[in-house]
Length: 364
Length: 207
Image (cartoon, rainbow over all chains, first blue to last red; front, side, top):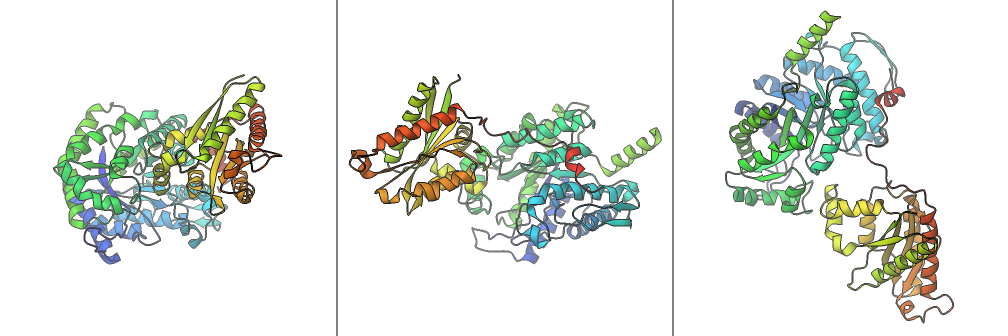
């Protein structure tokens, strides 16, 4: 099972010091976080994509392209790549380029984006969010799988004799996840293609996540990609740790109380009870996240949000160390011990996808 | 005939509240009228004051927490809804509107609804027609034609001797009962009930 971190790239004032990083500082802190996570031995770093302040991650492949050279083992991914407002042709090109540069050490996650004005800014209509995700992704796959594409659709100008370059590494496109919080249509899409399904999970009660993941699993089996429990599932999560649980509560509370998403709403007590946000000792995080498989089944990727709400870089790096040293080794062992042999431990790597593609070719 | 469940939402802030009193009377009138149709019904009361913090938290976080999941299930799963608000600054109260705002906008489609409001004087009675009714019409609820406004004086029977409050309540309860008894409202669709198959979704797209 893979464990990693994902960032939404928010620029938020640290409520304890009143200091706000500028955009440059925030981008550099994201680079540090990814490199630190790689050195600490975490498996995945994923960045969001946003086109409005206070978020700085407008250009994921630039960020990840740098990180491909500056990191060694960590899988680089997105959370999410906007399949609605980006041109699918540009996604095909950018991520194939990233795949080559990262030598296959990457995958990506499709998402629709939920910031209203981004749609019109990019010439799209938010009410067409699902049809855009369906059509654009169908085109993206063809651009990766077919050397020369003739295509006509509803949302972009037709293509005649178009070839997207560079061609995917070893002729095998990157592995794709689809992220959605509350649209079963997207779980259906992921199941249809046999792609991974990621539920952001944070900010939502587990009962909701569980239903959505189970729907995806059933449809994955329906479309003949394997048994429901073999579908590739990822979850988000959110933690804040100190060695001592009470220190974690004291230290995180001002960040929680002022956080952009839930600040000034429910109490931290209520919110940690209702959602996967876990504030406490590493042992408490282990217990909480070891129980996730009881709701969604054995899953392949767990990403933690640890760098938002104005938390200073130093604290974020400490969180990475706690995750890598105390939480992940124990969680991995516990999850691994319970996973049935026929369920994949990890999402497919590039090497595994190349091998599978070869086998398919040989069998044919 | 099966037993019906009517949910009465009242947004009064006082305890005791005349808004709740009106909701109780409307509920009673509806249950009695259903009895005349040969049907049993019970009323479940929701006072928004009790869940006011949860309503705001739901707005801020985007998901129902605390008592909200249960309350929302009750409201959207009811056979009929009685909605009663005090009139604040010429309209429904902010708390009442906030509650309506966190209900899934499609989940009241076809729901039989009876509207009520309370206020100091009968001069506010049209609030029901220019604020409450359009709100529920927007939500595609099935609103009965009689809505009941109770001014302070109405409770003493002096305000309207020709068509006093109990008579208006009885008439409104009768209309809601008839609507419930004949309703084809089947509750909200589940999130997963009508997901189109992928082939259908892809059907209209480019290839």
